[in-house]
Image (cartoon, rainbow, N blue to C red; front, side, top):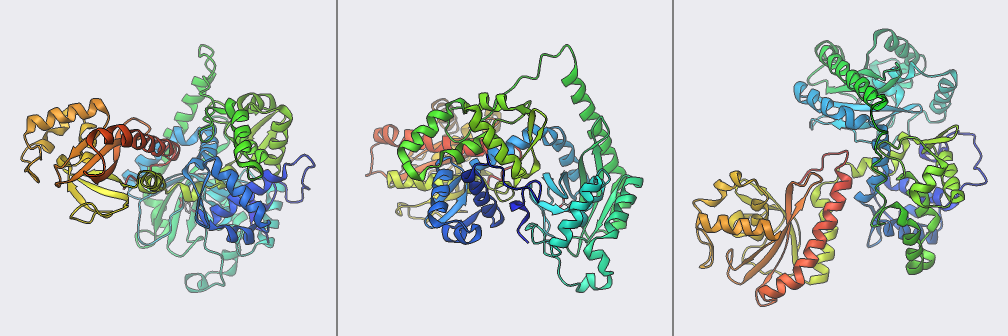
Length: 584
Ligand code: PHB
């Protein structure tokens, strides 16, 4: 059985003659990398996709040029920028933006994980996770696909299935009895342990799933009693659109060490239902606002555009230049086809061919062939003259990338910087009145202490600490400024002098510290801001003072360092749009 991602939207559909082969192959590579957890050797990709090595190389070079993956020796590694494809789907869907705050609040209130899922053909796909990290059970990621019959949301979605949907589901069950097409879930095994006492029917679905669907329809809720793995229990309620159709399903997920499925239902269902009622009110309000005649038409924020493309309309120029530079290694039709996905977004959920062509600057014929290809692969659905993205777009890298941390985002950029300057580069966060290193690329040892990830140093005497302190509201800086002691003869410890330095740092946008932490050590740092403008971390370059004068530091290092911070911030903006990126 081929994995589900290779199955076209209609399993028996022949490849349309207009389909763009390089786009299909590029998407296959992205699916394989996603299933592999975000990293694979190029030879591993060659084996997994059955494509020629030269084809894999060209696809990887094209995706690397787009900023969608990184080539790390022989490995291809998915890059945060790729999340802009999933972001386009989630923004067009609107549901995460409208409902995630309530889902997060419910998770806090119940101290259990809460998720939002949508239907994806005969599976369910997560669009939000408010996860309580617990040792006992696996937790799913945004974009993970689960077989409907092994979940609590599944029967709630199945209440709306047509006979064709049921037939497709039965075909899938018999073609893939062990769920190998769902890499996010443990495969169904021969019944052992907990499952040994269950009738086999419990494991294989069949009539049991139809019965659960009937019950779910009658009751308005559904349970998952360890259908995915022993210990995992969930209770789910559908969130209905104003028109009555199921928009998404909210689940509370727990473990049998805390709840049986029945006790989970008894304790959680009332509060889950009241959250769902509030969510449905939110959806009605939003619809009313959208449809209010006095409102101007929803302002389009426009597509965000791929890596450094200077907006989508610059696409033709960008792909042309890339072709010039990379020659045969750059596959224009792959780059253009993927860019079509980014034409969709908030207020741009349904687009006509003309709108897609206008937004991307592609010729109509090119946009049309890309849409036909994406529709064939199940990433786009056509409704008469308009097209929408499907949840399957999240299978293009979102699950592994949704767990990316700031240190992981920063690491390749720090390595580039350190490589160019031949000096050490680091990322740190504030921890109390200290800084804590969270990523570091060292070129030589310049300090008496060996700095590694996790090392803490006093904030007031470091460039990293000073840019982060300067990012705090002045009222919060106080505790950092008093009771400081000199670490070298040059350390500034006077509270008023430190306060003045922070004001200057805030204005200048960088901090340069010369011999205040350790004699002979010179370092320069700039802040890293999240999408709201808040300083969440800082990056620096540190060197022995004999390497550059203070003036050379400002003239030569600062522009490079600022550019690096800008690249980290750009990745953080993409990664943080629908997920909470951990800073450490
Ligand atoms: C989850 O959010 O992890 C989840 C939700 C429903 C299930 C299983 C897992 O049935």
